[in-house]
Amino acid sequence: MADLIKVSAQSRSTAVAGAIAGVMRDSGYAEMQAIGASAVNQAIKAITIARGYLVQDGFDLAIVPSFTEVDIEGNERTAVRFAVFKRPVDLTHTNPQSNGNS
Image (cartoon, rainbow, N blue to C red; front, side):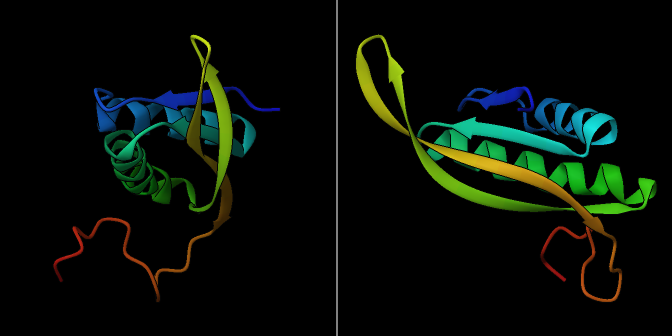
């Protein structure tokens, strides 16, 4: 199993993106976990930024989200888990450098 990248609401999306890119370059697979809407938002932003970092390496990212239960100080919480996979770059259908407004 890959190292788990834990994302919080306070995580810097660019720092998490760098971690994702590093893990993907090394092993081609990453797992992320976020609890709460703000943390999930930071995780999605980080994945989006990481796509831009990795396009120059010749691959894109695909994610598969799922729910998992985690114990935090005796309380069970629902986390969103993201499995991140490599996929070939298809520049005809995706622009990882776009901000989504074009």
